[in-house]
Length: 90
Length: 147
Image (cartoon, rainbow over all chains, first blue to last red; front, top):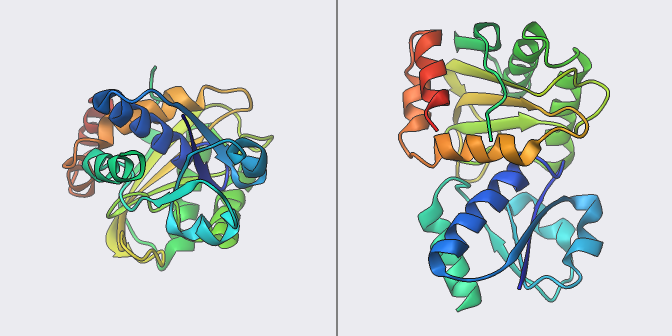
């Protein structure tokens, strides 16, 4: 299982998503590798990813992908992340 | 995983900003005052939002302004600016913004350590409101250290 988080710089917001996704996955007892990248590195990083976590601004730029694209509104709301990850992975 | 230092020079409370650009520039100035970034870093933070949209508004009322690690970063650093009047960034869910964090990460810096600490602070859903209503720099440093 591979999950990619995306933002413009590949640090900061995508890093926060990575950290909180890992916390949620651990609680859900799901093993996954979570990678934070910037938009430019997306194609390589997402080639074998099941899930992409990001904000609405990047959905169009992500383009065509096999992965489930999950749009996160509040990056600090682990309850929101839990619901959305459970739905995508369950 | 420590949070980058938050010296009092990197905190500004009740600031006035006309729009999101001036809010981001204020937090850029705060990073400059604390010695974390050069003036051009503020331009880069503004450019990230111009290029990619208001995605830096990662929670209701909170923007995490940042750009890439690069030559305009002097040292890992964090800054906090609270706004007297919240400004809109154009985010569909999380506007208006009353707290702007500025994050500068030096090339090769521990950005995941820094953001993990930021997550520790803000996974407490009361932290943004507490920062927005803080009246002293000391309060802000206590809230941000609470991880």
